Length: 420
Image 1: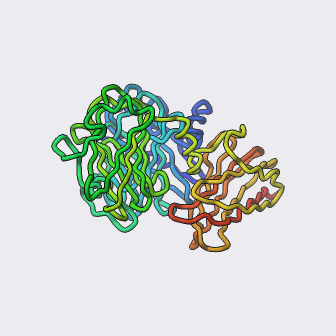
Image 2 (image 1 turned 135 degrees about the vertical axis):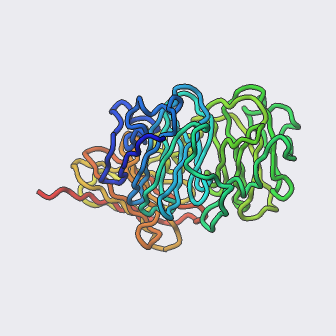
């Protein structure tokens, strides 16, 4: 019934499957360079024309992520999913061709699986899957139309565990036309307010749902802010259909970017506070700002900034064998660059001598292609990545996981050369 599944291995050194062409490698902010077409070829990866959902089986090793590429030839309602084999817990991020984050999900598929449904415009997209705890994992990735058979059961079939949250259930269920929701802008269309942004505030105890109206197709951003409350948001259309959800996009705050115009009509925001439902949460809806979204992705270490001086990058200089720098790392990722003049293995460590932080590391090449990611190395909170490198400049993002105060981290880079 479904296309045959390809076995793909994603790691810093080992990779298999059908690689993308050189012309496609810069897609999704360079992420496509390590991706594989979900249908085997670009021509066979058009979800809009596929008779059934497209599947891939992926083995993720060493804290890395697996990237599936697909195209949408005409605007379509698309479902993206990932489910681990065994007891693993998947995370997915969907990016458009420019590298903008379209949606992110942890457990909306139920039982630790990931799932998202959204309208996608024509273009190329990258679906990144990784393990929640960075452990090795085998999983299945599926991309299809919402009319195709789903891979996962959906979040309503399971109870959230301590390390995951059921977005729909935690937000109080589906919000449709019959749901009692507070109206933003007194029920008037918010189109004219998007340039400056329109806000509303209330606790989940008093106002768990907010409704707003678009009179024209608009690209916009929704945020929910109050880190002490730890908000989580889910957006539904006028019929109660799931549109998008997010938890912890910006620290413990939530953010959803609609990078393409959403259709006119009514929408509902379901809000949940994971820490304290009595605290006020500020909801803001504003016009989507592509430049600001890109800067935010740099601050989260999700995309590599350009080497033109527009974003601060500490130049560590040439790496002959070993370099070390110390830096105070706070709630935004710090960026470092290092120059390699020989082919070999680049090892990077982020060490917290005080033991008070929880750093993560992301390694990119000079084109912005992600090579490796790691949070916890072994039994420690320190991080380590290893990547095969050729002569060139490499970028390193060092950040702290949410909830940790700024701390002084030691960043070590070492180059290992092949034996001769």
